[in-house]
Length: 133
Image 1: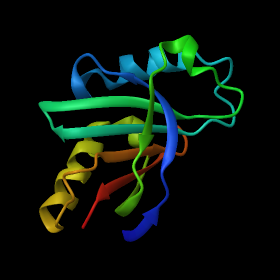
Image 2: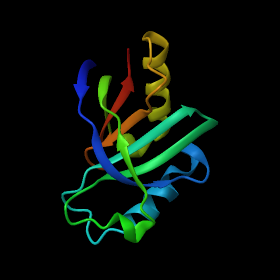
Image 3: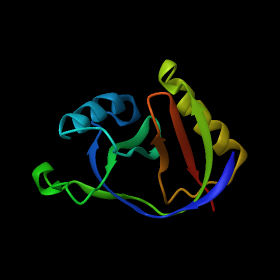
Image 4: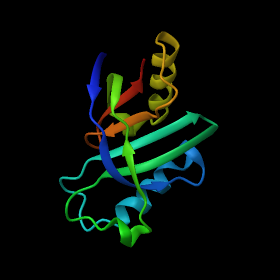
């Protein structure tokens, strides 16, 4: 676990219709719009606390992207200071993601003006980023 400052990341996103619970469906829809997943950086943004949350499945915007073809759903992964922790084999038990955020939030003062961030390094490795003051 470490604290790092991350820059703003411009992204295209699909908003989940059911918050975190609908994250897989949002990512399925997002991925179906991309010609390839190779070389892309994916993020999940959690605004609020489940079950009263909003979830965005995001992909970092590249020069070749055409967000206007998606209904112009552009957003940002906000810059700032985040507490970061790695989760290995997250796909084997996705409940570990929420449990990790809950543990980190109980031990640290969070910045509620920014979302919690999931950075998907691979299907086996994720970095969770808790916004801190």
